[in-house]
Length: 172
Image 1 (cartoon, rainbow, N blue to C red):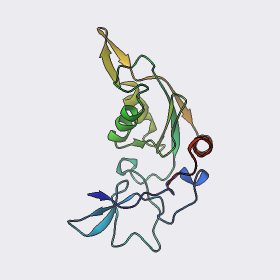
Image 2: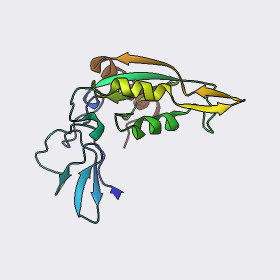
Image 3: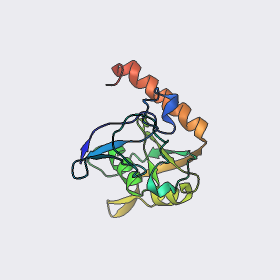
Image 4: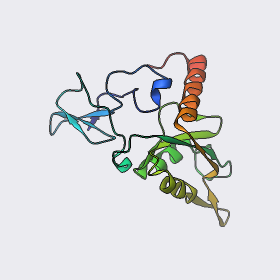
């Protein structure tokens, strides 16, 4: 598969970026079917243009269109080659199938992750279990997990986006 289009209209992103008309889908082009498929909800489109039904989110969300956010504070003692463990944490969250780290979710040692209300408790349990051995003991990946409402999560994404634009300019 080859990444064809990246949506900025995902749930929560409307506070940070204008809707690009993809309804929150993250379409990828599949050469074997010659179709576009959303990597989130797995819906197919012949073309990724025109009227598009909004994305329900990750398959693990079970069609739950509500969103809640968790603010993870990375543990400075976590033994990963890159410090802080942003990519590792984002990958672990994504691999659960019930959460993801949206664009502009990392700043100042904290990672904002999105889930559906129906899956957030399982996601919290999964995140709290992420550890790595260091110096003969298991070190947790996160120091704290804060539950946030959709509004607060979107406000943090907007702040992170503004900080990114101020530091690096408009993203491509």
